Amino acid sequence: MTNKIKEICLIFWGSLAICLYIADSFEWIDLCQLFQQVFHYGYTYDEITRMAFPFLFTALALFGIAQIILVSFQMGQTTIPTFPDAERTEIKLLPSLAAAPSRDNYICADIETATINDKFQHIRERHLHEQSVLQQQVLEAVQDYIFRILPPFMKNEDIESLYKNVELWQFSQEATLQPVATNGKLSTLDLRHLAWNIGERLKWAGELRALFIKQSFPNELRDSDISSIRRNLRQQGDCVITIDIPDKHDFQFHE
Image (tube, rainbow, N blue to C red):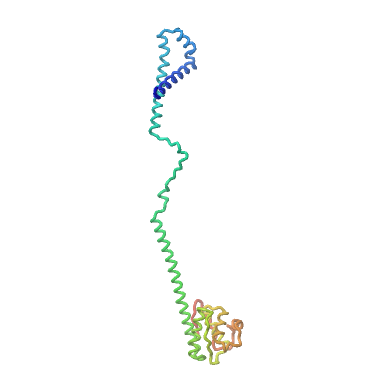
């Protein structure tokens, strides 16, 4: 007996049993009395047929419905594969293409960053150039000042050496300066004023101004120490070289 026949028999007898159980539950028939009468031939053939036909019809209807359900279930098993390990299977979803930045976006970002960096670098270079030009203009103004006020009191070579000392001191305060001398007609007060006027344009601190003038005129300032010179850079008195205060945001000399 094949599995198909077994299924049909099982469904048939199961349906018949369900029908008889329902009929007995609703007291449509008395199963015990029915079986006793049938087995003892208490009913005629026609009577048995009339009583059994509704049950047989109901059993066949249930059998047909069961067959439809069985076939549908078998078709569902055939068309829809099962995955016994689906619960343990990890499904990795691909990232959304819309969320992933494209190569073009990276290129645009790099170009924008490079453009901003170039702009910053250009600003730095322009600032350095402006500072260099300004410093050169200040040095030229200092040179003009020295060459204009010192010829009556110093030799030409000493004036040139003094300006070279200014250039050296501007770029390195550890440089060795060339000693120069006056003709004796400038006082220590004049030399201190000279140091203040030059240092004010070049943004030297008071200590650096005192060191510069002390090293440049060692003979004239042999009796003055650095601290004394620094404290008295702007001392008032009878002098030839006066204090020359530059205008605001300017470096030009007035003498």
